[in-house]
Image (cartoon, rainbow, N blue to C red; front, side, top):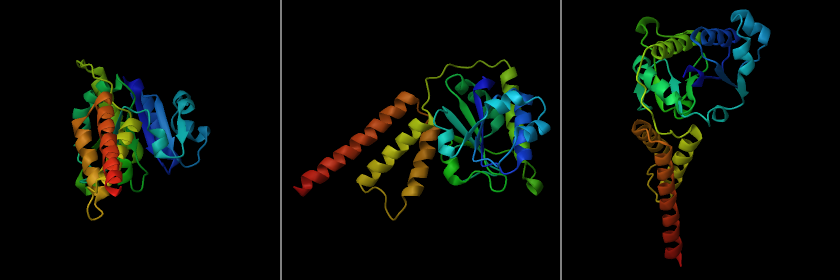
Length: 244
């Protein structure tokens, strides 16, 4: 299942960190790397840090935007140096690792890491089903990007080499399908004037947290999307009939 784990580096600013992550991937048996708007680098610079890693580097994909790198993922895990109150779905990576491997049987699972200076912002974390942070000493909590990636990959490898009983799962929605659901909810709630006092962003973030915790499968997400569009269309029909 480790072949289905996708490491996504969002705007990495240091070549040494990209190389460190590639080396960690080789150490832990991961193969899929996606880079979003990375600092310019050469293969020579990376392989100088991560020897015999040409296979990972050759298969790496580069994207201009984060949204372009995520649509096919069945589940996305965001990483943050500290728990974020804005994202309700948070977990411990050790407890979460077996579930991620089970999910990987149904589709690619992404591990998202943000820029070295500020990490993933709230807009990026909104794209994630769940957020994890590593329990470091509060006196010196910050981890290097490659260190954080290695620790998360290690937990996944430990779960992979253990003898877990992985339950079969219904196919989950992709990031693209989930974003379609959230867009439909946003439009339908706007149409019925549900948002008050400019609180649409806060309410939508709460709804994201609710749905991430509910963890609907692809069929259920499609049903919710269809329901949202029915509400939207019904509200528009009422508005038209009232103006006639």
